[in-house]
Length: 459
Length: 139
Image (cartoon, rainbow over all chains, first blue to last red; front, side, top):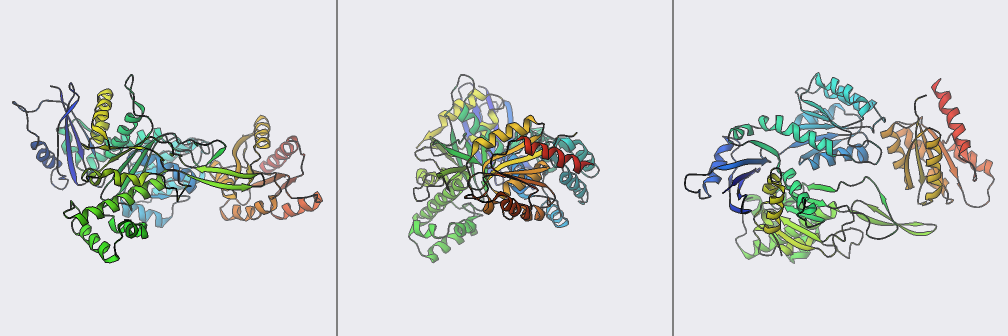
């Protein structure tokens, strides 16, 4: 047997998956609380102990891990114009699996510096100016960042003409300082891959150690990437296939968590109808969005607030009933529904979280009336023809009726301008293995792909 | 001479794409770096593009007769966003009906445009003007 150990050090749980590479099967999965305060290895050992070992103990040929422990990868990005390099920098950070705490634009002010200092990001992404474009602001911001009281890892992804100069300025105060390609080399051209790699590089050379995760690295080979990056990588592989092994084609992945709802789409999203004009920043093929106000437990109050009438309409409940359920969520974030009422509430919350998160992820179409008649303008991705929606995350896995929740991802004829999938099939990541498969992709992409096709089941 | 950067676009709810392509081609051939934001461009798109690319000129086209409404306030917004001194040219079928061009020109100059072109202007005219205006601004 060729056993591979795959670990996800999550913010709350350490999840382990053991895979038999030859038979392409899961031998076992288990989880235990993440023990970042003491020694990260304690939780890992506890989880591992739950899977019965073969005679003579485990002999893993590889041990790979991803992590979102200790707050995940926290980033702040800074660009020039909010809608242009500001947005491009934000997307690069999200694509690298980061939690983007804040995005700044134009010149950084003293109060912005206070915010950076208070937020204590793991990495700062500094962009601004197209190649050959504005140099002044990124140079000024580099100088300004030197006023910070402590050193930060910085990735520079701005105007290439001054990137080296910006790095020289920043190195006086900060380290490591890494230069990547510009996130927006030309106006309206998004180029996030190089910045993504640079962020990942800094993550495993510096952040792992800073978070005390390196204790695990004596046992493991390496913590390869942030968990969301592993999930995005798995989704990409599942969509695109590898070599002779075909993928599932364009797809969307929805991860409903306690604090956030993540949506990944691996799709071009070109207009599905003729004579539609595309506007705004081009979208990355593999796009990830994170909604910090849409979660089932930690963010449940925020979710009810954003949802407005929808929660009451869906459930037909009074405000008191909803408030009562909300307080349960707050009291005990680990709660798995005990009564029918609680289960109903969870379904309602999950469905609305999915609905709103996908609303924000997909593109929109608007009608513009010109003297020559109506014209259509699309912003973002048109995912109306998308065939596959995959659900993952605790809430979906613990519910008997996951498709009821996933139906939130579907096009709503009452909101025809929001380009959500119209007739997608639903799938479920039943064994909760997507992050693990993103890791396995690093060493055996074909096996990871075939295993996902086997374990991600149609609903 | 350093290559100069122009932001080119068709303002408002105007979808005239052909002339936009021709101008893009002509200005590029003349040696300028053209940042073409295309049709249906808002004032904010012109300004954002100009800031990010550090452009020297904003070139506004309007072919559908609503140019006066669409262009009003553009100079003020440039001033507000820190690029108040950028050169601004405008041309096309700027207004409806048969109006005296001199009065149209005066209105657009008053709005803060540096040059205003009547219908039927060939690209050579603004190219010559650009060389003059940008050259003189350098010395």
